[in-house]
Image (cartoon, rainbow over the protein chains, first blue to last red):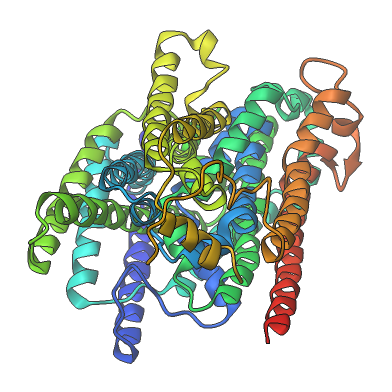
Length: 502
Length: 108
């Protein structure tokens, strides 16, 4: 990684944004005292849509996708299509039914539907594993941006980033501030789009709508002999493209923290309609992300510069190379940091909750008091945070790629469990347990395969294993369920009378 | 709460591929139509790209066509598909609203 200088203005903007977010959270607490991260009362479907989008946008969206475009061209589109189409799949296939089922975390759903504490335990472990992988990607983004901001090496920047995240979590928790979802979304999207417009202006492309303006830049790239970069299968075959896209979609539909946010809405119609807004708001970012990579390529072509390093910072480096004002570059860095911090905080709380509630309270110590649970949750948060630092010191891939592995795990395990749980009453606990275990095995197997044989790994890439994994796990569930006794009658009744009635 | 065991062979009381008459059947039909559109939007285009390619890089008339400077495959995957997804969700919600309204009306 190249040496970066300290940018005081970026630090100022970061402190200002974090401060405002705390202040805003405090003001709204005065009006209504809901728990900090889990819920945020938002009014109107557009508002809920913004909340969905703000919950969704992580460092993978903000920094990661542009990095994939920069290195792997059209393969980046698999991320764009996969991470928007996943919401369509979730809404159409299971949204109404899960909502009517009334259990919004994966372990709760699994216990209620499959009537087994062991299945719940496995689901909780999966939720924690997903948290770990997902957070590793976020930490990488945090470490890189902090390195750019402060001019430290990667590892100290990583530790600093984690320290900032944990202190923010502690302060917000101690003050009881609520998270302002809509404000958070507004900040993220402005911090992403405004610098892009400035870059387009500086490079003489149509700057009012850089999402359209980068078309001309693509044409210039083609004329400049960079046509190969745009070719569909230059960096990945059509199979790899589709497998990745499919994996990201089923992963989205199975991710615990997406489900939780998706359903903390008062009524089912508003929940449904807010998804339309949610995809639009997420789309605003995805329509724009490729432009950063294209503009970075254009500058290489024009000025004969070498490749920008590291690719995961291409959003920031493109802005820097275009020579736009430093405050606009700093906006991008700050946007990346707050996207990462908010995602990490949400995930750590989810993961710690899965341990403290689903494992410690429900299985190990049913007589634990609420205070004991809270204490365990706090300690788990710290433990998970420290564990992720270790994982993130030598990140094994691009931010978006690491994130995709978390999606593959969700798609291989929780997606089939939800899908068959909702749509096939005969699915039972043996099927669910066998299915989740084989899903974990397939995910780990794909990682081992990548290490053992890169050639074979092209058929089962770690980022895309759910294309084969999800159908295989569904078949395992069907087979094992049919070979074992049917689930209790009351569960089938519940499915018919509650879940599949309007 | 009844505790009688489920009848033997009664495996399909809730089954996506064998929906029960009434609301579930209507709902499943709607879901199938929307899923078909989703499949087409997500995977139809890359398959078409692969089908019409004239070299291993995947270049074809679809990557040469130009709209506002965009090669067609960038425009479709990067912009069009998201709009199409929003349209699918919009239609699904509108039809779902009609379905539940009709159902509720009949119950009264």
